[in-house]
Structure formats: structure tokens, C-alpha cells
Amino acid sequence: MPGSPVIPAKPVTRISGFQPLRPLRTALSYLLAQPSKSARIGFVFCAIVQALPLHADTDPSTGLVIAPGYEQVKAQCTACHSGRLVAQNRADRDGWLQMIRWMQDTQNLWPLGEAEPVILNYLAENYGPLPRGRRAPLDVSFE
Image (tube, rainbow, N blue to C red; front, side):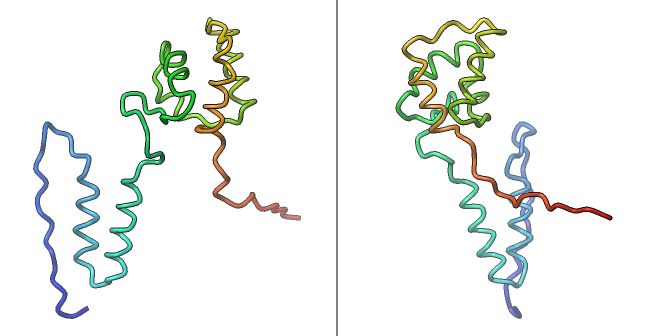
């Protein structure tokens, strides 16, 4: 658009050598300098969406969703490993049960007793499988 102001990129100052916002600032400077208003709006929208947490109530120390069963999962699972290890996995209830059984068989996980159904419900509800985001692979044959 003629007459649109070009916003020059400001130099990024180093803070202890770590600059997590540098790519964001570079992209923002580039897009704001572009004449397309829709590009600027799109970028701002994407930046806002990416900044939103997946769950509103997440424990910052463990990365686990705060929901019914959270205390039992925190007590049992984070005794051996990070809550973020739990949070990066996805499975249905049966998948989580298989993981628990594997840990009990091979990693000396203790019996969970009455806490097991609570833990399984929590894990299946908050860390269940994600819907597929891509189409199924095409059946391609070269005959």
C-alpha cells in the first residue's frame, strides 16, 4: 500500500545469551514492513493463538493440567520422573494402563491400589489421543 510506514527492525539486545523472542521479533518486523494489511492481521492472530496455553489451568512446576486426579498423578508419577514426560505422551485409557503395567513390570513401579482408576481417568481425559490432523495416506500404486 503506498504511503504505508516501514517499521525498521530494532536490534535485539542480548540477555545472558538467551533470546527466545528473536525469531518472533524478526518475523514481526518483516511482516509489519509488508504492505499487506491481511499479512499483519494474520501474523498478530497467529502470535496470539500460539501464546495461549493448551489448558487454562496448568501447574507451571510440573506442566500437568490441574483437574480431578491431578494430585494423585503428581504424587505417583513425579516421584520418578518429570510431569512434563507425562504431559508429552498421549494414549487412551488402555494405552495408559499398558504404560503403567510396563513400568510396574520393568521399572519397579509400585502397585497404585485405589489411586489407579483415578490416575487412569485423569490421564485418559487430559492426555488422550489427539484427533488426526491429516488425511489418511493415499493408496498409490504404480502398475
